[in-house]
Each structure stands twice: as C-alpha cells, then as structure tokens.
Amino acid sequence: MKPIMEYKDYRQYMRDFYAERKRNSYFTWRKFASLAGFASPAYLKLVCDGETRLSKPGIAKVARAMGLEGFDYTYFALLVKFMNAKNDSEREAVLKEIDHEARMNKIRIVDADAFRYYETPACPVIRELAPVMPGATLGELASKIRQGVTAAEVREILQFLVKTNLLQKNADGTYEQTQKAVKGSKETIPLAIRTMNRKMSELAVRSIIKDPVEERNFSGITMGINKSIYDRIVKEIDAFRKKIINIANECSKIDQVYQMNLQMFPLTDKVSTSESGKDK
Image (cartoon, rainbow, N blue to C red):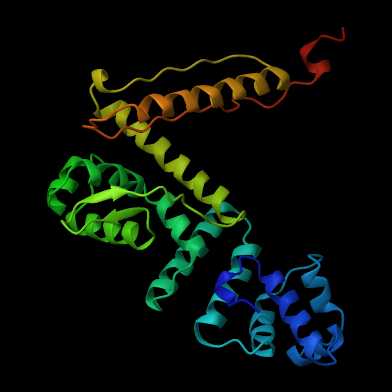
C-alpha cells in the first residue's frame, strides 16, 4: 500500500487496506469490523461504500485495527474530520490542522501546501515580487506589500515557496519563478481557490478605500439574464482572462504586482415563469 500521506480520502485508504489484507490472507468485512470492535459486520463496508460516515468514536477503533500510530494515526483522523466537515469553514480549519501537524513532524503534505498557498494572499504576491527585487532584504520586500506583512512572515513564505518548488533560490541569493503549478486533490483545490477568492475580494474592498483612483479600476453591471446568456457571458469572461494573461506575459520590466478579480454572481433567486407574469 501507498503511505497514508498520499491519500486524500480515508475511505479509499480503508478499501486499499481491506484489499491488501484479503490478498494475503482470509479477510472479510465481517472480520475487519470485528477486529475494529464493531458489532455490525456490515458497518465498515457501508462506510467504504459511502453509505454512512465513520463516527468520531469509530476513528480510533479503525485506526487501531489498521495498525496506525503516531502521525499516520493523526493524519487518518484528520482525513475523516475533513471529509465529515459540514462547510468550508470547518474544512479550512482541518486543513490548517493538517498543515500544522505536517510541519511539526517535518512531513510534506501536498494538499496542505496547496491550501497554505491559496489561503495566504501574501504567497502569490511574494512569488511575483521576489524575482523582480534581486538583492532586496526581507524588510524591503515586506515594505512593498500593502496588506501589512512583516519581514519574519516574508522569510517564512519565501522558505515555503522554495520548499514547494514554486520559487527557485539561486546561488547569488536571488529568486526566480519555476513553471511548477500548485497541485492538490480534487477535494482540496476547489476549497483552496474559494478561500483565495474570498480573501482577494476582501482586499479589493480595502483597495476601494485606501488606494488612489489612478491606481485601481473598479466597475460593475447589474443585469437581468437567463442561464443561456449566463453561459455565454462566462465564456467571454474566460476568453478575456486568457487574453489578459497573454498581455501580462509581454511585460519584461515588472515594477508592481496587481490582482485582477473577475466576478459574476447572483443578486436574487431565480424567478419562475408564473412569477414573472409571462404566462398571463
């Protein structure tokens, strides 16, 4: 079996454990449940099939049955907690726990790296800023970031970006970007990006208040549309975003880091045909 740290789904780990044991010995779901101390012989099969959740008291029982100890046990428990979470706020809290535990145990977890990158607005900012300020001190880098970052935070983020190969540190102490993308699981990346979008939107609100109008551009449209028109507009937004990326890539002398948010969201619930009066 793969190390548990490579799993993003506790049910998959349990399924693989079961399959491994079954290959090497007579092993049934009944025996697995009995080994874990459950009265119901079908309970763990139902858990692995996604028909029920592993209960909080059941975590220790199953972990013990699978021989998990130390960080492996902690990671399994956090995977269960993550997948049982009811909302994004709870999932974010679990990912922070995973990141903390991984750093404490000097173990790298890809999902924790991805979440930390997107969850911390200064990460993408410093990734852009450090290469264009060769020889700058930590304090000089911090002073350029308008969101209030300390030199100590800059040091920690630079170390994180180098460790995850999102920045490369050269022999002369300068930094350059790599082509490496931020990777994570299908469960974590959407959550991480939602977190980033929320925090970047909060920075946009602060920019309206703090930044001179010559340095920012805000506009908005309130419009009534349907699903078909919405889909067409989203395609245009995506094409526009790609065009902006190409224009930005033409810049050879970067002197400032900007964030551009493209947002389109509903302001009302859908109106039915009867409510709109079109059937009258």
